[in-house]
Each structure stands twice: as C-alpha cells, then as structure tokens.
Image (tube, rainbow, N blue to C red; front, side, top):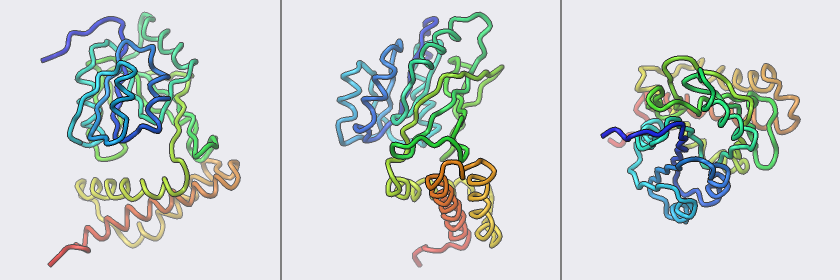
Length: 259
C-alpha cells in the first residue's frame, strides 16, 4: 500500500548493520528532518537503541543487497523528498540550509547530486578522485529509484537533476586494516556482479587494470598532491582492482569448488 505523502516534508533513509561507532553523529546531523527511517539488517551492538533515541523508525529487515535495501527503506518514507545517507556520513550545516532552500523553491529538479568531503582516518582526501565525489542522494519521492546492484548502487531519477554546493562529510575507512577488511567483501561482490553480467577476466585484466587504477588516481586525478596518503590510496585501490579480477578469474575456472 502506498504511503500518503506530506509536503514539503523530507524523509532521511539509512541502512545499517552494527554501526554504533558512527550512527550517533550521523543521526545528530539529520535530526531536523521530518522523519528518519532506518533499515537494520541484524545489528548485535547498540545501533538500534541509538536510532530509537533519536526518534527514528527502525525496521528489522533481512539483507537484500545495497540497492534493494535502500529501495525498501525509501518505500516507507512519507515525505515528498527523500535524502539517503550512510551511517558514516554527516550532513553539514551548509548542506542542510541548501536542502531546505531547494525543496521549497518553485521549479525544483527531481533529484540533486551532493558532493562528499571524504576522509581516510582523520585526514581529508582532496584528490585521487575523492573530491568533489558527487552522488545523487536527494530526490523527489516517486521520481527516483536505486539500481539494485550488488555494489556501486546509484539512484536513477526521471526528469532533471541538479547539483548542490553544500557537502556531505564522509568518514570512510578508519585505517588501512579497515580498508583491507572491507575490500575482501566488496571485491567479491564486484566479481560476482561482473560474472552475472557475462564478463570474464583475461590475463590483460590482471596485468594492466591494477596499474591503470593507480595511474588514474595518482596521476590523472592528481593524487600526488595528497602526498604519502595519495600514494597509499592509489595502491590500495589498485589492490582492490586486482582482487576483484582475480576472483572473477577463479570463478570463471571454478577454482575453489569442492569435488
């Protein structure tokens, strides 16, 4: 049954799992919203309790995949506008003011791309393709839907989409160990998605794609201006590229299957 929508209300949607270290700051940055809707996929820490403290509507949902989970969360929204954020993101005061202005302005677009200020640990990454890192996160309900991909999910909107200047603050990987741990999951999902699309890994993929990833981030995206951090990030993402194509290579050849 379709929810009755209010105008010009804004609904914030968040999907999460065991995010007690991040969720409070995230919720604090959006407590001005008309409603906050959380889809929790089995947290065993205090994530659900913290969300309840902020008056969020918390739903326990089986994991469906990133895109499908965000669509499920959005289907429960009552506002005319939906703002999707992740648990490690924060809405800056400047972005809040800009959102309030655009959703009340005549002739608003149906969706808006928002830049993200990305941090690795406590250091802001200004290059490597990490800034301005536009993502479409604000969209008119009924005009946008998440692509239900395993990774790199994104919103598609019908009609015009604009860009905002106010930024989301993204407190991404805590350190190298955190990156490597998550890389294992994401590279597997990416390999599975490529296989479903009918793609195969070649020797040239294994040999050249990781180096191109490094070259793109460090040279073309000016990662060298971030100093040692730029070198590190460029090689970490090259490792991710190698990992996903190596896993696709194994899948193509049935490696690791039990007899």
